[in-house]
Amino acid sequence: MISDFFQSKKPWSPYKDMILAYYLTPYLSKVCSLGKPVVVVDCFAGPGRFEDGTDGSPLIISKAVHQIAEKGKAVSAIFIEEKRKYFHRLLESVKDYQNICSTRHQNFEVVSREIAGMGRNNTVFVYIDPYGIKPLRFDALAGIYANVARGSSIEVLLNFNASSLVRNGLAALKYAQQDDTEEELDRIMTPADVDAIAGGTYWRGIVTSDIPFSDKEEHCVSEYIGMMKRYFDEVCSYGIKEKYEHTIPKYRLLFGSRHEDAFILMNDAICNARDKFLGKQRVDGYLFDMRANDEIHDPNRLRTAIVDSLTTSMTRKKLIVYAMHRVFAEYKESEYKRMIGSLLRDGSFYSKSGKTRINDYEVLSLKTSFNGRCP
Image (cartoon, rainbow, N blue to C red):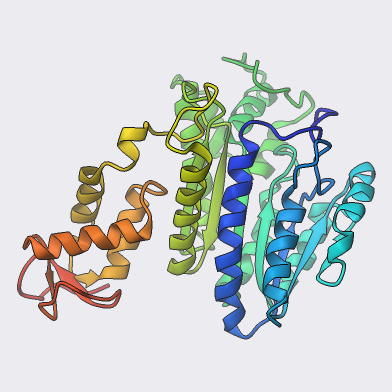
């Protein structure tokens, strides 16, 4: 990690922080109704505040937790930081929130076992934004995820640098780099180290293939997501680029949850952050979204995603989730609902009740008869 990592926010950091902030407040409001205490865990907290005075993730989380705790809800946060110089600054940054926040000067891999245990009696949101990929041993993460299969409510938002995985994988296998100018490599990382991070050996065939670097990055992400799907019903990926003209994301935000509502909420959080941060304009040569402005809100693209997703009779909510996976983070839930209403009115879709004004649990079909099975 470079020494001035927390001197000021990198150009892409505000976008990531907005996504976290936009998600947390409605998420906390919703899950506090489940009856269990809610815990937000920031696994690589850093100093809490950048040297230029801007809030880091601990303060973003503290403020969101405080807002809900003020309403009498059982919600708290835990901040983990291994580096001593950052831990002391972290204590100072969150001192005003000591009644709802605790800090740990510990290694993530050690604390991960405790986090896994939290899921048995708490609703847990885990934010994982490491300085690099080396701390992200998949077995440590899987220990946390495993509680999802046991019925616990655990969600994770993970900053996964797949480009770094590819570059370090090539270096570990002693292959020449296609492009190693964007970041420093860990020259002592072994193939076994990369296996532990990736959660398998699948990356070896990908990074040594003849496909372009951008495809290697995308294929590694796809395989990694497949492993997360062993634990979560809903997994999504959002790539954030440093500059518009770049073809490879700076990193990927990976989100895992067992709930459709959480998936929809994350979609809307990213859309809200994108609209506010970009203002649908290019600013100082930077654009942090992977699509051109005129493509993002193209109604025809949304219509196609919805129509192609209605392969059998299903509820409006299920249809929105299916279509949202096709064009994740391009349209808000409200846009899906408006488009479905339009499709009902023009006769492209049919509702079981025959009405055009419907709720999420109304069953929809491409045909007037409802012989299809509703998943």
